[in-house]
Length: 263
Ligand code: SF4
Image (cartoon, rainbow, N blue to C red):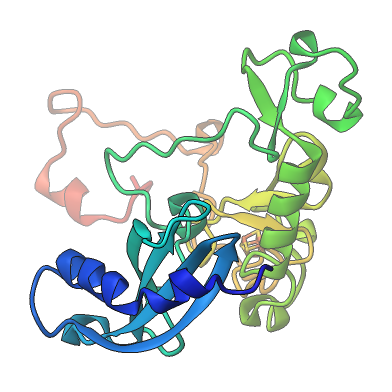
């Protein structure tokens, strides 16, 4: 970096006037903090900003001159954050701020054309070699889960509530794999995951791993049926009774009070 040009360095008041003009109100430009070389015959003067809304900021006024000129011109005036300046938190893209549950009724959530969780169908790109995803073909979808998207989901599910380490699973009498309510997923994810189809289980209608489990396991506690099979009468073995003297299907008072089957 060149040394500070002496004419530019001396132009403190010229720079101050420019800063005050930019500040727009008196009392917002404080003491001179210093001057730095920006190039040959180019320098930046710094003034403390005394605007109460910008504590820790400073005015930077760039001045320069042409060769052999004894006067400087103003190139730029900006307000910059210094040490201890109050700044907003770093900007985070909306796609990184989204959390599960943020998508509500009627909301549309876009996915990038190159979202790494998705892969094009084999007919759309040559050289696509994810053989696992071949299993997903034929359903008319432009994109299917990529290996990365599938691994993401598997890790998230396995390490979360649907996996074997959740409190529910740890206290379970047996794994989902041996439960009659376990419905295995199709495709590669089916090697480790299925859906719980037990209306009384906490995970009903949710993905569960083969080694997840809960107290509603179909084989945990098998009781005698609460609905005994109905008694089926073999009417070829019944004694027939003559019911003469009144219309078919009716009984008299004596017959009605007698036990069934007696004459
Ligand atoms: S009832 Fe329990 S053990 Fe059976 S599939 Fe559902 S979560 Fe797994």
